[in-house]
Amino acid sequence: MRTNSNIRIQLALIPFLSVFGYPILKAQTPSGAEILENMTSVRTVENSKGVMTQTIQTSTGQHRMFELESYSANEGEKTLMRYIRPASIKGQAFLMLNNANDIWTYFPRSNRVRKLASHAKKQNVQGSDFTYEDMGSGDEWREKFVATNLGSANHLDQRVWELQLDGIPDKEPPYPKIRVLVRQKDYYPLQLDYYDDDGEVLKSLYLEDIREIEGIPTAMIMTMRNHQDRTETMMEMQSVTYQWEPPAGFFSERNLKQ
Image 1 (cartoon, helix red, strand yellow):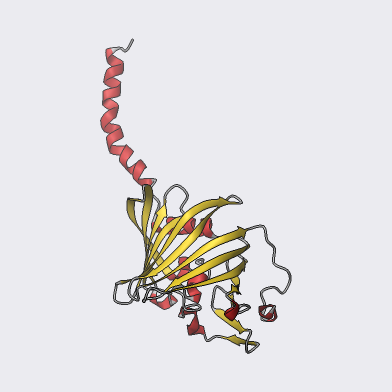
Image 2 (cartoon, one colour):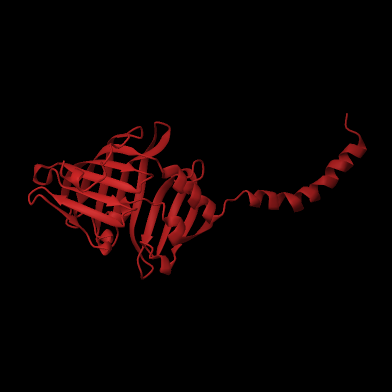
């Protein structure tokens, strides 16, 4: 049985909790830098190997389909992609090192390996809506952007953080601004909006059908939609493993010709 003194104590605690409880809850909201760090960590894997299909929709509504194999190592610092189908470009490959700062391409018809100029990383890959830089590691974002948590929101029946990344001009960011919807339960990104120099949304990346593959959340479908050119590229994973170990010399110019 409650005594009057117990009730008085409980009532007295209410204003105390009202004053001091709010800062405690507020402190649990992660900063932009913390969200970016967690998002980068959840998407960063040591090595990976996969096969994917790529469907490009042009501005006229036509579709072009490709199949390619993809390899990455050293937490995305090294990437090699090689086309398998169609026959017209089978064997064409590109190698990216140093987070896409160094890029080599191989064309079977000429049997030549060519190193691209540094500015080429902003070019689209094989007519898709992904640039070489988009396919490189996002690990450098922590150095090239200032991250701000814009707050919590609902997106597709999930709680997300709205993260804004503002590029640091001296660091040569790939885009002046990126806004990301980050799933709160595991910090996996669901949508990224890339802005142009005029402050308009240039394109958006949608990550869908997220599954646990070998204990790692993985988007099986990634769609890049260019709002200004009215084009779209969908990358769909057919198979992927994170248990692959690259043989010695795998990420080399010589291996591009294999």
